[in-house]
Amino acid sequence: MDLPAPLQWTEHVLFSLLLAVVVRSYVLYGLTGVLKDLVKFLRLLPGVDTLIQFILAREVQTFMNKVSATPVDSEPVKKAVEIPEKGCSAEELLQDMAELKALETVTEDGKVFAYVYTMEDEHAKTLRKAFDMFNDPTGYDGNDKPSARENVVNQFAHTFLHENALSPMVFPALRKMETEVISMVATMLNGDSRCSGSLTTGGTESILMAVKCYRDRARELMPHITEPEIVAPITIHPAFEKAAEYFNLTVCHAPLKPDFTVDLAAFEKLIGKNTVMLAASAPQYPYGIVDPIEDVGRLATKHNLPFHVDGCFGGFMLPWVEKLGYPVPPFDFRVQGVTSVSADVHKYGFGLKGSSVVVYKSSEIRRHQIFAYSSWPGGLFGSPGFSGTRPGANIAASWAALRSLGEDGYMQKAEQLMKTTLAMEEGVDSIQGLSIVGKPAMTAFAIMSTENSGIDILALADAMEARDWHMERQQLPNTLHCTIMPHHIGREMVFINDLTESADEVRGKASLSSKGTAGMYGMVAKIPDRAVVDEFILQFFDKAYKL
Image (cartoon, rainbow, N blue to C red; front, side, top):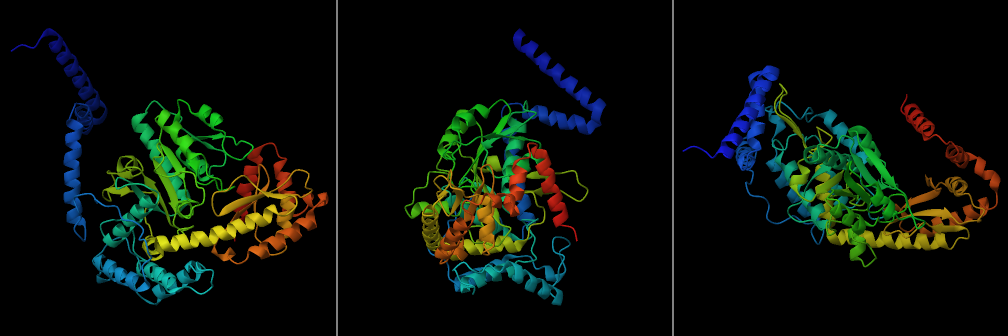
């Protein structure tokens, strides 16, 4: 039966287009190019891409079961893994460690040709001793002597010290621990079982991965954007600038209002045709103030843009502070529009250094983070994050830290640290000429000098350093940053007394503004070309890392 004339015409047009594509591909790329473009063309037809995805998922499952050291479930996890309500005992963790280690590939039998380059000998023992010297997480309880729990965290690190998370199949215990850490963090941040993520080497990598993810998402969904942009407050962590430089984006910074919160009207005006993501902090590192996440979430929803919350600093503190009854504005997956959150295990998660998590609302978003390369003679290559090789020690220690502390342990730490923080803030406000910047939400704050106080805040930092305090100086405007950590517990009055004496020492002495680091910062602040200041920073690091 002949097709109606309009359908015949459509058929001829489609066939002509397909023929043109085939001829062009063959001329330019040969038979391989023809097949590649033919597949692309077919995937545009209704239902074809869905069928391809179904077949791929089935083949991936078959492949994983063939190459994995242990069976891999074909069904997704129905119930998310949560941080236990009560921390696990050292004995429980040791039992867990034995069971996990039993899952792993035994490299000592000489049948593995990649991933592990070490062996159990005297050299390995020396490495463990060196690791302990610089990675012993003491001081969580305000003591110098590690607890039984801390010792077990170290034992986890020891046990998996040489294992490599480059391959999720060779070391299934690492894969289990990593996915469970991600799930525990996701539930802590009020995500659900659809959440997906990665354990990274730190907050910077978590942020880099989020930016890379949304850049690649834009390449797929918004290919017309050739100069992608991020909109964020001026207080956003410099890792976003680093990511933008690495991945060829631009960060558009919104200014702050007099109360040190972001100007939302200015923020929205920066959203334009090239915007591929929004970002904000929970809290801002400089002042400990949580950005208006709900408001930015509404903007993300309104403009149909992904929104990353940088909770690297506060992700492991704000949930517990909120549960203790302190005022914490919503900042996590409860907020409509939030599509990803980062949180550092090695900060208030009390894990080993080099541990952070980036969590996405769904695996559909996370897929844009993953790097895949199928044309290498060395085999099929994929990597979920910036790093290829990833040390098993940090993954294992992160898992052990979350399970050993539990919600009750984190609540206890948060309560202790908040009491110390509030005591310090109250002490600062009692000193003539000093005040706390804005309204901090957790265990961090900044100190500024009040107008006409006669106190140069940078000279105050120099005076405090003469009393053996290591002060964090900030600029635009000049302030002093204080993050309150376990080793500050019980030292509140020492801090306030020294700060009071230092303020009295520098008050009214304008000459101190030209001396010490106060003089250096003052000089830098007067340089109008920030590129010159950037060059100063480059030369500083170049000099610092020379023998």
